[in-house]
Image 1 (cartoon, rainbow, N blue to C red):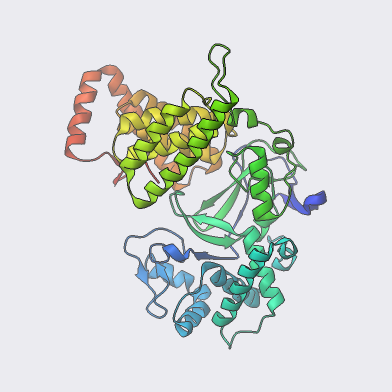
Image 2: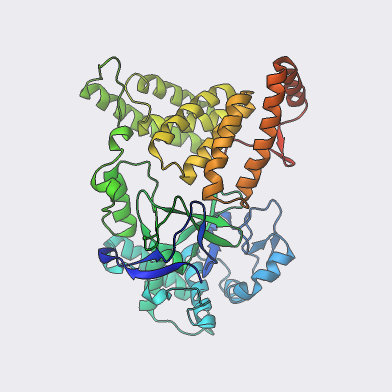
Length: 466
């Protein structure tokens, strides 16, 4: 059994705590999904069994909706897919992912009576649905999903009451966990993990959740003492405390009273302004540049959506020109523009400029995030690859090593990202040795390689954007 137990966590309801000391990087528990589905928008590109992205997936010949890596994945998924397959054929068009997920949950409940293993610590009946706290607009949308469910649910399947169907929609709204592709770069689906649902939120948590092939893993970000509650963060930490509280109230229907929110920890850094020899910009100047930044971020997103990446770079440069004299290095407005600029410039293969912005972004993130935060590790990794592309091998190797130190804790040694990083770390170390022996020879060899073909890693072209 896993070293965890359910306990009464006061006004938070139930929670999970450990029954023995857990070390940094340990897997507290692993859990397969009770049920999971691919997002509607990616149903043609992602395997409906293992959630890996595939260039040429194999389509189910019956429903013509589900896609798989190959026949092996298709056979492995058949037990879960067969009732779905029949329903899809009959209705002719797949309903949205929430409806498909509720149907899969119910088929699983009817097959396994709600408990799929001895390690499952709760039934879905006991999970919170927060229906009584939903806004009228949200309840209206839920009722539409319920109606779509009944249009989809086969007449030959066991009838299910509307109250219970509504409960399940409420449960996945609050507890559905986003699944990522095999590299961890893109969200591709949503699943329900009963034990994970019992882990409460903290803005500065002691655990992180990572999807490894076939299951989620709850991994310790630091040492956890026996009897200590397990926590994860439901939202990105890079928001001031009031905004995190607003997001949590809106999506999860509770008021966050964690230490970082109640004391506003790091809010001062996230809203920092430039201090030049004791002189700070006036409140009016700060407000003007803040308003300009918010408008610029809207324009940046519009240009990105349209695929106008040169326009994105132009707006980012204009925005940074106004921000740099006013905002501190950890300002969220500044960091968001730096992140976008580095990513898009990398895509446009303007790596030297991208590397400069990426380094500033990482320096800011490091002062804000938990030192073992997975998003921090991923940002450092991308910055390292950008520096590598730019030919800045010393900085690239240092960043890649720093990223590995974080991601070996958050993802573990067997995750595809960590394996890639290990290859990168070895390669950049070899290149750095050559660089230190003879910089001219190193640069000549690098130019020869780059002029002939792109930089490769494990047989694949290295990409710096997700």
